Image (cartoon, rainbow, N blue to C red; front, side, top):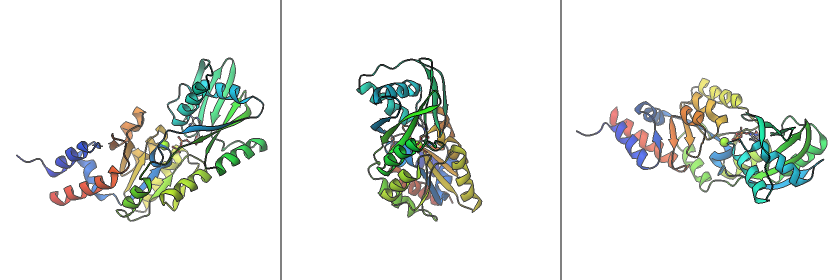
Length: 288
Ligand code: ADP
Ligand code: MG
């Protein structure tokens, strides 16, 4: 007997390195008419590197060593970059206790008896820190602020390369949707603007917490759109769950993200998505 078209399409997607979790998801892919993409790890490689360290009260190596110790338990790409940079400099990482991560905000832990926080510059008002953050962001970097015992002690600037072909994929998705693509990010608005321009997206929202991403998707759904959401982080899990079709990039490490997704791009190639939509649409035409 021949395989039903939706199942055949799932098998084809599988051979291309894309896991589609059910026949219903394949149908939903066929009817999607809007797309929202996360920035970090979705439009970009998600392998940021430390570009520079700016200590205020502490010297750079001490700052980096404390930040890396606090970030060590975290799976976040920014955390991995901080730890890798500290190791590359030969710095010893102290043990962290009382570690806690707040998705979309950052981490905190106690390191050698000091409370260390590493995270978003958004709530920080100290003018010296704001200046360092603005300089980093003007250079297209993501700035994170390091607090030690509740005082801002410096800024780490990180860079993350665009995925090759991101611009072409965005254009191909735009050709398959009613609304122009939307970029959603927890990162700062300057970096968001740079990445959006580089990939050809006009509609962008920055400095979003996970719940804000959900609200942005719900807005579109309330307007009647069937939104495909593409993300990679634990911070994207609620948005993926809210989407008409939630797509997780393959490098997504967190179980929560993989569970919330309807589609997992196992091969981690963004460029597979437009072809996946076409495949779903062809399969559906055969069914109806
Ligand atoms: P995105 O939506 O771009 O994937 P996230 O929601 O994961 O980004 O993070 C948003 C912001 O929160 C980051 O740009 C950073 O400022 C801060 N942040 C989140 N997790 C961490 C972490 N582990 N270390 C440092 N900063 C973090
Ligand atoms: Mg991300």
